[in-house]
Length: 317
Image (cartoon, rainbow, N blue to C red; front, side, top):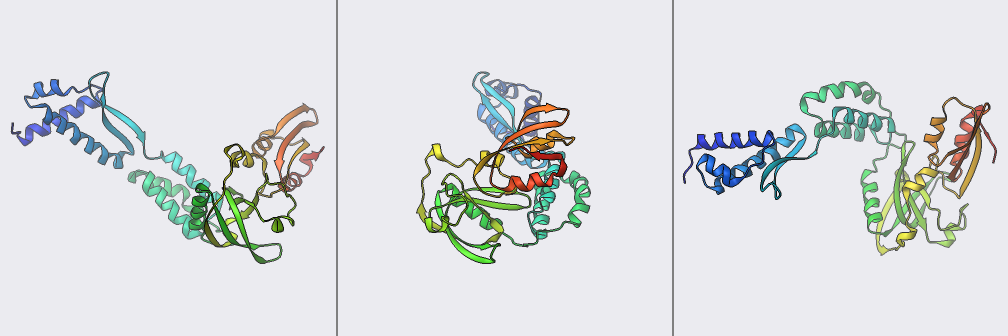
């Protein structure tokens, strides 16, 4: 049956309006209403689906028409919102700027992409105005290294359990050393991205403070001068896998070392700041002289933090 173009447009709009109002569209019933066959109604539904796919770029919301077997018809369903809210983009921009982890060129490019992809065009200037001053005065890290591609390649090696060889600039003696390691995680802390990895070479490990295999070594990614991903793979049993989330809770300033428990008295005014800084911390006691706190931590970074608190903290053990 041939269709007049105007009739088809009107029919599609009416079906779309029904879907927006929450109605379930039955092809047979709609075909009877409009005097067309069911194939025509199916084409109308496909046209609406195509429109919704295209319109998602404008609205940031991905809607589609799905078949409901229980209702024996088609209904409109919101799958997910593909755009961040203005407030979410603003928060992410502020966190990125405060991280000071990238060169200014990289930072500006990422902020622009985040804005373009995630904020409706009419609202972009609002968000841009709220970050413009901080973006203009952004201070890039002193190393001025662009390492995002290196970090991505390390991530692929982690995913595939491949050994890597790195030429690493060591600050303590200003030498570049070569290491073959098992990469297990990428982490971020205080302006820098880090690789955590395990070393097999006993000759190298004998100069480390901690020899236990359960503690990884830590490398700043911007100091990796050369990276080679090897074909050789390593295996870590699932029960022994490295869990960066648990490691993150226990490490301060990305200083490696053995695990230990620290106990101290806190006399400051904001105990929440301490508990946020040390996710494993527990309050053991509270009295007029403050809080007694215990926390499980990795390495020597905790010493730096404790000293930074001055008279607010006195170490017990």
